[in-house]
Image (cartoon, rainbow, N blue to C red; front, side, top):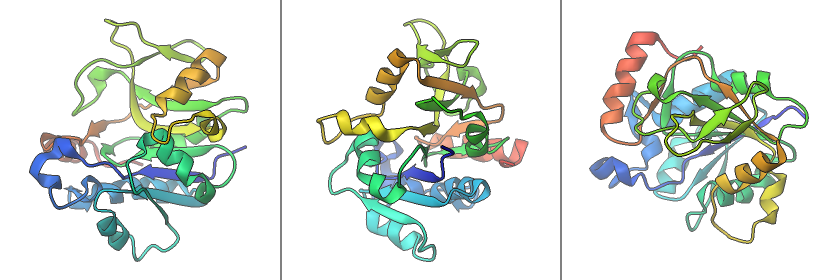
Length: 233
């Protein structure tokens, strides 16, 4: 089944942003004159999924107000932080059946639209398709990657000390297995690890630019990247 629903994660506290998120949720911080959430929605608008869901928690009323002129976007408000796995599971009634795109709202991209890249790489039988890149191709990111990828595109966890590939916060996922976890709040890493064992977790490389805007200094880095390379096409 071709994915036709997108979940944008926008519920976090953004504590690494310090004072910038004291009175504002991180997805509304501006980069190059536009809110981070709007950069994510630009990708969605170009890829054209039939349903878009944004989850909220911290300062969720501000995100709701920001999206007031886009009533087709559904909001999944979380009274407590559910993490990525719990948040996606809560939103499933709004997303509908079948595989879904998920996209973090705290990064800026250049090059091919990540959602279109993922759609082109999705195949029957996959459980997850993660968008990846080597650490030295990224901005605003420190540390090593988490995954290695074989010639068929299957991913596995990267051994400690190996550079690996970084997950960029965009994927297609079959969410059916989320119902198997007893915890209310849990990470999607739990589902990925199960799919890795099953041989159903795959990766695909993003050939363009990517900048994490998780810290204040990431704003200037992202703006410099956009000036130098143009936006996503």
